[in-house]
Image (cartoon, rainbow over all chains, first blue to last red; front, side):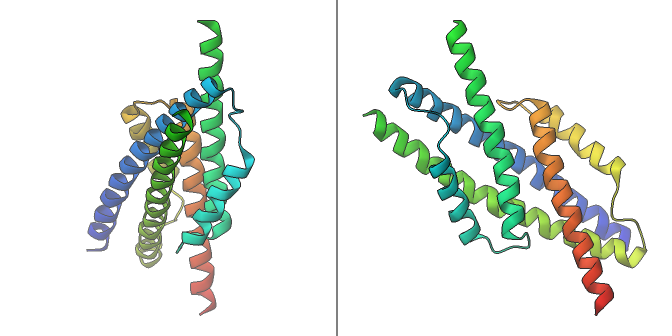
Length: 96
Length: 96
């Protein structure tokens, strides 16, 4: 009975993993598009004020179980990876 | 026109952030439930084989723009935070 529960919970977790994967990549695509617009306007891609604002909104809306500090940590990793992706795009654009 | 594009993309990004927040916490809840089942069965909460399997599935299904290494990195952070949450629950359970 219990291992049945475990199996069901794991299947649920696998489903959420796939949704997260899609959303994280969907977010990366939007960030790439933002990078392109900024490129045209010669705006700096890294915007710490905007990042801080996004983190504040996220922690305000956070109902747990993760602590705000954990949510901040995970999103900062996602932001960092997104910035690196924009920088790669920028380098590629310069090479073309 | 361009700053209009930027505004729209940012609104889209904010929407995805909220969806991610909900999914990350939903995932944490499932992990907590898994922790409870494992507690009853006295199974160790940390399961590196299962983690490796989840990462393999995620990178197999990854269509980018994030590289597999980035996806692995972000998910490892989520896994680590989830394990810490389970350990907190375990400590609290011992204190009751």
